[in-house]
Amino acid sequence: MLKELAVTPDAVKAYLDSRPRWIRWREWLAGHRYALAAFPDRVRPLVVVAHARRDSLKALEMVRAVERDWGDAPQACLNTYEQSRVCS
Image 1 (cartoon, one colour):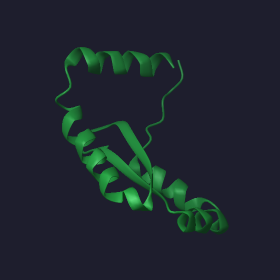
Image 2: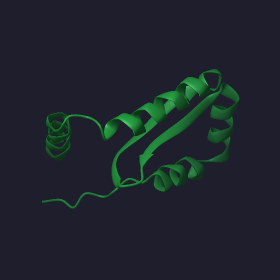
Image 3: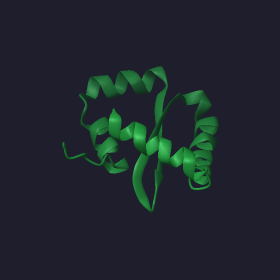
């Protein structure tokens, strides 16, 4: 069985920052932004919301909703997520 690596918000930020400067500038000028939904008590799921600069407030609302609602999801849904994650 393969050992699964945990993808953390810091790892995603480090990746985004490690890309060549011209790519980061081109995305920034085009208005591309990223918001991360992370959970303090678990490493998964990590949700990355790619959005346009003009949609920053809506993207942050989505991130907060995911962070708030994930813990309240029915156990059957959480089990299905875990099973699909392991199979893929």
